[in-house]
Image (cartoon, rainbow, N blue to C red):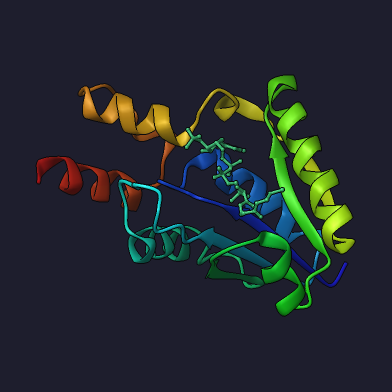
Length: 158
Ligand code: COA
């Protein structure tokens, strides 16, 4: 596969996301990790902060680029001439929404979605639980990269 895209909000990027990125990068010649820029949504981290944490987290992968998009994912993919979206499935509860999005995206533009079954000790992790556990003083550091942990500490200290 030539180009693929892994989209998400990454607020913040976790080791669960990293596992999907590492595996997806082996399946294509170029993987674009596309951070959604939705000004209507309140994020803990700004777009630039989310991109910076991703950039640092994937620096060991030569064929991964970090980008962002606004609006419909399919419009972004068409503009970048990317035909495949990659998504990670953690368990069966992710499936209904993912299938719905995959069908909608395919009907809108012909874009295909490829799912990777998430694996390992990060299956139960989500960005919002990482944010909540961090805010409440719990140990979340094993689920994120050192830079994300550092940025979380700084953010929560503000
Ligand atoms: N490891 C760890 N966490 C994971 C994960 C994995 N493998 N896979 C998903 N998650 C978590 C995320 O951390 C996130 O947690 P949160 O809800 O607690 O913040 C949650 O699962 C959902 O994340 P993700 O699957 O990345 O979705 P998203 O909401 O971040 O992004 C978009 C969804 C951006 C891809 C989708 O909304 C989109 O395409 N929007 C653009 C508008 C559009 O085209 N709409 C029409 C869609 S048909």
